[in-house]
Image 1: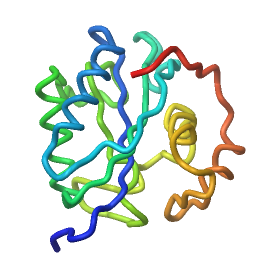
Image 2: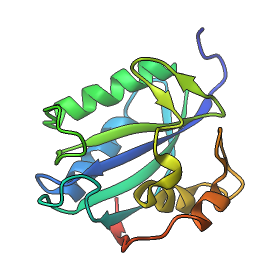
Image 3: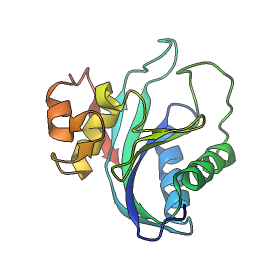
Image 4: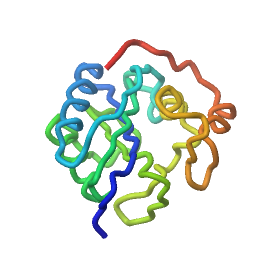
Length: 168
């Protein structure tokens, strides 16, 4: 069903290869240039230890808020095209190193359960590298469908050493 009214969506940006800060800056520009999308805000850059194998560099993450008329799968396809353009290789290794990872975290208040897309993004409610940047740009009362208010989730999530390292 086509989107007629703009929806606020939140996109997670992450990288730990090939100059991660530059990867996120390039991704931000590419996302903001998409037709049917307007950037609302973007968080600071955050550095955190990798969630997967520990023999990889730390990750740099940010969260971007957008207003969009793209349908969820259209937005996912556009994000995956940006990942590919920036050298993302899907090796099958879960939580392995990558040049760029773009995740559709939230799409309005929708719960989406499709073979290619789950929103809210699985694990969002427990991941400091998502919650801390999200809380920087979203109100604490933001509802994360199925999980509750962002502010409550943040209170339950230890920072595990995450730190702000700059601006996108």
